[in-house]
Image 1 (spheres, rainbow, N blue to C red):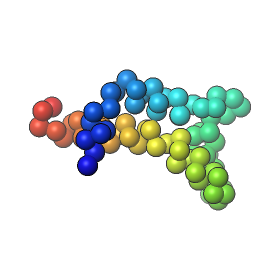
Image 2: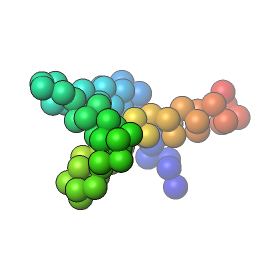
Image 3: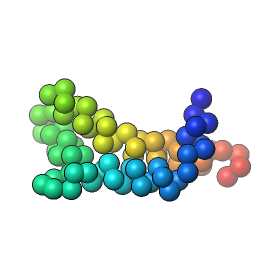
Image 4: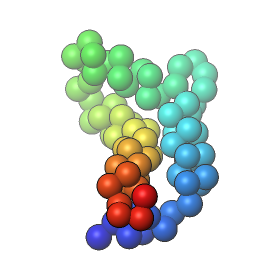
Length: 75
C-alpha cells in the first residue's frame, strides 16, 4: 500500500518537508503559528486546521518512511 512512499527519493521528501515546515518564512512559519494556536486551544477555524494538516503532512511522511525503513528486513 505504501510502496510509492518507499520509492520516493529521500532528498525530495526531505526538501519538501523542510520547505513546508518553514513556509512562509515571514512573519512566522505557518507550522509554528498553527502549533502555537493548537497549544493555546485556539485552533478552531477550518482554514487553520487545514494549514496545520498541509504543513505537517510532509513531516508525517518522513516519519512513516523512516519507520518503514527501520522495520524492513533489508535494513
